[in-house]
Image: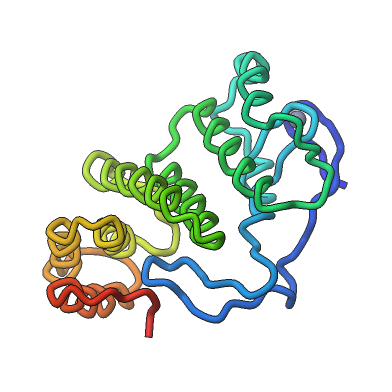
Amino acid sequence: MESCPLCETKFETENVWTNRVRFSDTYTDMGKKYIDINPLFYEIWVCPGCLYAAYRKEGFLNIQGIIKSNFKKGLEMRKKISRTIDWNASRSFEMGVLSFKLAILCLQERSGVSAARYGSYFLKLAWLFRFKEMKDEEQTYLKLAMARFMEAYSKETSPEVGSMGETGLVYTIGELARRTGDTKTACEYYMKVITNKEMQGDPQYIRLSRDMLSFAKEGSPVEFIK
Ligand SMILES: [Zn+2]
């Protein structure tokens, strides 16, 4: 049993992060092509009482930046998104999508949230729609993710980028540009990773940026990391 840190409602969560999750490929924007179970359906915990939603345990229990009285006032809005979903039920694709939409709404209730965090939630929504081959919705959320990552890169001194670091952030912007048809911007961002020696982060993104730059110039449609 888990307990909501905002309203104390008790609820169960599904843990699929054992050996049940398998993937066949990694997309060039780091999304995974899952077989059978898609763990994105379960990543966001949702309190069935107050519809507070956030990323698994660590994110969910951290309510820093949320003012409880303001949060209560947002319930009507959250109910509109959640519709008649029973959050105690087993997760479906629809619930996966709505859980991320609720989590994004809940980010707006927090102060001091990096645009990169919005970006990563939008990107995961895009991946969910990709899983269902819903191309228009995927494109919509790739563009929203790109805008937030660009904002984080240009305006924040230490954007919340986690383990991918600055190289990962800039490479991802390039990838999202390429996947939404803006090759010129894609090449600009790959070049930033390749030429800026000061950039911190996982060195795999430098290699990927070199590869993707040549693919983008040739116009080859690359889906997966080789
Ligand atoms: Zn709650």
